[in-house]
Image (cartoon, rainbow, N blue to C red; front, side, top):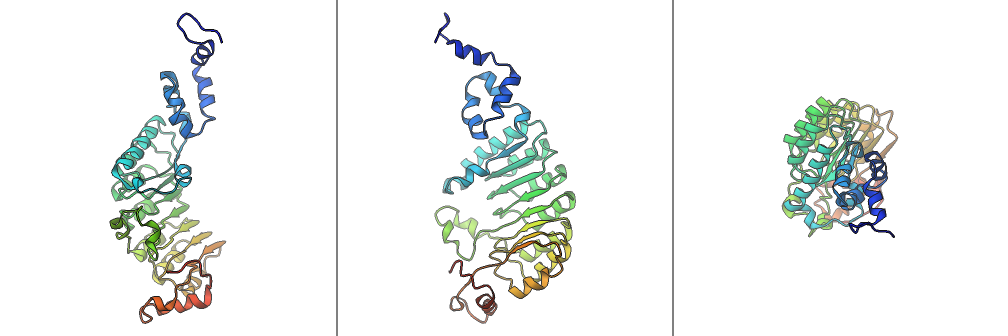
Length: 307
């Protein structure tokens, strides 16, 4: 390998002389992690190229989260600040071209910035973000009216007011995921999710269901795992969301099989429904309070987990 008088190899010189267009073409073939941890650190020209707006139509960290066992440090402020910093950078570099965001553990700080810089946003997933509140959701609803998919699962500072805002301002919303953690058997989160956060589980299942039914008439896909909605809330959804094709009610302990059948009978487009789908021994609960569990013994019979 030949070197010039300065000690740089010929191949290094060739890479340094690549045009910006060629660099963008090469970098577009790398995934986000490779660009962020590798290419961006090579030199100043590569760093600038890695910030080019065409490289950021989407920002997806979900695949990285899913490939790793959840850790307690994800729930710390320090980790949240790192995610916020990344998200703000991407929103800034994209120059308004960002259409899809899938992250976890962000906060109002970065999400408010996204609302200012990403008017074309269509997909927003902020699962497990304890410091995302109605404040940033209001800004997202007001500025990102092309939103068609929203995942606010495990975000316990978000209330029915946020659902009203999103439904009122984003008429194209087709997919809503509002899943809660398994409050029937929270042992799986021990040592990972802070106990005070687990205890903050939203209790307003019917209120949220009423907001969904009233303000999100075009929904086609709805997930409400472990929601505390009852037959009343189920009725609100079935009456207000006639276009539902997929409905996930896994873990909704306050619903009986009869409640679900009655409420979904008028959903003509419904193709798939995930029912509560578990069995709880009657001896676990006081029968006067939880007598409806007998219905699960007779009608579901799946015994997926016990508590």
